Image 1 (spheres, helix red, strand yellow):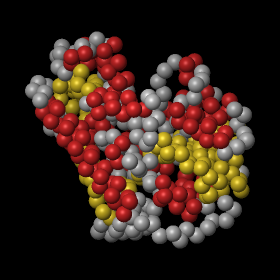
Image 2 (tube, helix red, strand yellow; image 1 turned 30 degrees about the vertical axis):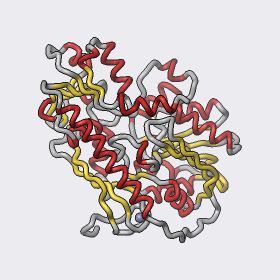
Image 3 (tube, rainbow, N blue to C red; image 1 turned 180 degrees about the vertical axis):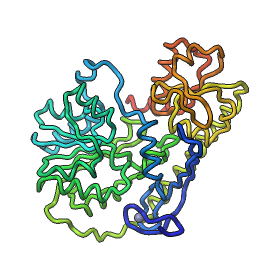
Image 4 (tube, rainbow, N blue to C red; image 1 turned 90 degrees about the vertical axis):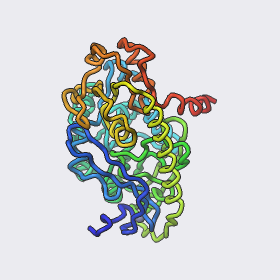
Length: 398
Ligand SMILES: [Zn+2]
């Protein structure tokens, strides 16, 4: 480690250019953690630098992150596929893959594997969350390996296909992981992956630089990373509309020989993108802060997670919070920034009629629906993003 905090995870350079700092109060932790989001001055890759410690990340996945599925078993088994699975199924069909042995890294509850199996694939997968593994068995009868890919992939060989949907942005050393993917595939085997795409800063939501994402891939840099790991990119699809931020899906084929990637990257695009986005993010949070400053009374917050940690960091709402409600039972009784986390039922039954700030970008509309259904009056709800989202949604329906 050097004074500047280590090396670029992609190219090894020590030329670190900070673009944003966050101080996040995490659930069940007394001290906030500080994260620097930086751009590599040599290759232009945007990343946490230095990254959140693996211990803290493990704590987060255990106690905060909600990757389990909620819903009735029968409706989960029934079609249609999720948007993610739908994109992978179409990509696999479009490049002419025929069913064989598929392995999904980070298979969560097995919904994607279930879809591939129904199209003739023999499926396996792994996930580090015990709850996900048991759900995959219970809901889809898929026996997945408990662990991350570094533990489980070395036991695999001659795979026809590896699926990695929103995995690569979470990994400390994506180059090493791609090396393991390469080793587990048969010659000519395929890799389908999807990650958030670092593009179009004007379309990126507030809080896009986030705790769980160590990497923010630009297409050219991901292509270069894949090529360096021995993959030939067959197809790249950037989808700006289907999710809350642009995503990039890539189909790649294993090369027998690993070519030496000698291309020199131009860092200026990454620097410009990260700086533009950091400026936009600052403006969006400033608007949110001004809006919340108009609320004089105490408030509840709905959502105990990273968005609330960012809300506490970027606005002055903290002292006004009575409690933070969340639907995830493993969070109840814990505290975030000294505020108790309560269940939705406690919120509904609470004597206070205080306003409820909905602290989520991605799930805002679902939370509004659940709160209305629970009996919270509409005029008590403070939605932070409804207006920001409206023009984008209107556009995407055409
Ligand atoms: Zn670099």
